[in-house]
Image (tube, rainbow, N blue to C red; front, top):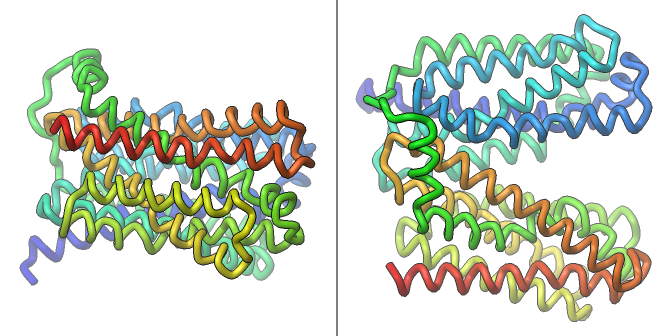
Length: 394
């Protein structure tokens, strides 16, 4: 292996570790809930604000961070973001008022927004274009492993060392990552003199980018509508599963996505990116339609959720596709915009499902939940047809 190729792998490794690191910080409040509520004298409402403000920082700063990546490069952008995540942990170590904890949590969200965008930029710089989706998918899998399996070791460390010492350790890791990134990631910003407004116009004025955002967003229901909130109550009311099983089964979707990221990316490389997305949408739509009939047994349902999780990795391919429709100087902004748009559709699905369930009879009514969850296969079908239209009009 040549020296330059070895350095490229090291740079990618640091970016991937940061992506997993921010996932661990995302789930950390669940692990330290009792300790944090006691330290900062929080009630459940304030703790909810503390946990949720992470997403305010994450989503709200997605486009500004994307612009920063395009203007100043991944070296400075990721270094600053890593430092922000470390700084965001400091209130837990040094303060006892909840307002400082919330500010710190917001900073962690802001810093975390650069994780996937920085990885995107670094992979494009360090690896051949044909390997892009594969490398990005492996990065996403590493991050999801941090989310799925990071909680256990952190909980164990908290029991052995105390939660404050664990926070010190993670703040130190963030600083080490920042210093390492600053010294090993080369400057890679190109000549870029256009204004921010012209960059934004270039992205939102590109119809193929906008269509990709909308169609990919319509397909996000399984992961951002069902798996994160509505899955457990649906399985409990419609299938009569007990609380533990109904809460555990939807996590199979996340596990499937973890392994689906490299699988779908490899398939897209060998065949067609658009074809892979369309196939994923069709498979997910059929899976949900089968589940909505109420005839799927629990064993088959676990398999279905893994398959749905694998297909949910279409998002990586969609984000990459959107980036190919623009010039290199706005790739970071395009990635940020597409990712933000897809996440926003998660809010749309929650709103539609919640309103439908409420209107049709409430969460205690199985039929109401079936009607509500029906929004997911409808969105998958429309999104798949939309991507088919992109092929026709290519």
